[in-house]
Amino acid sequence: MSKPKQNAVINGIIIDHHPHYSLSQLCLETAVHAEWVMSLVDEGILDPAGETPEEWRFPLECCHTISVVIRLQRDLGLNLAGVALALELLEEVEALRHQLQIRSGFM
Image (tube, rainbow, N blue to C red):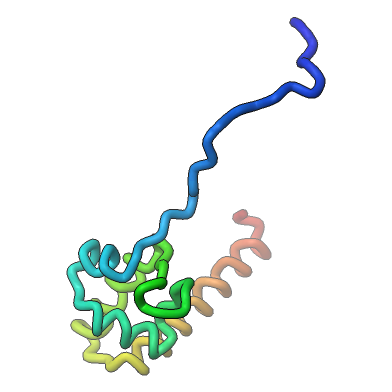
């Protein structure tokens, strides 16, 4: 086995491992209206990067969040404020479950 070369130059392409959607791409992907997504941003349910809707970039996870929001509204009849509270509580429950798993030695 030969020794690795010191000071070797490595060429490559950096690939963004965290793809993002624009507002229009997110709307196409999730089949929702831009105005509704804007209301999710106003309510604090979604937090895109960027200052204006034209600059907004949404992480991939927003697609899942939108599907959860749709189910909460459809199945439970929650308004957006209720959805925001439900999502916050679901996150807390998940964090507590994770802590319990760690303490129980299941991780």
